[in-house]
Length: 47
Image (cartoon, rainbow, N blue to C red):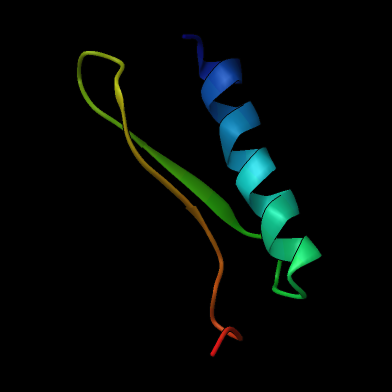
């Protein structure tokens, strides 16, 4: 994957967060070999 591909994943997470009524923040954790280790979006308002 490329940097842009990882950023697209983070943006997907941010859009999903916005769809849940959250602040649109997304993140992707990538290992040294390029493997996506984790991805998530903001969930501060979720109960």
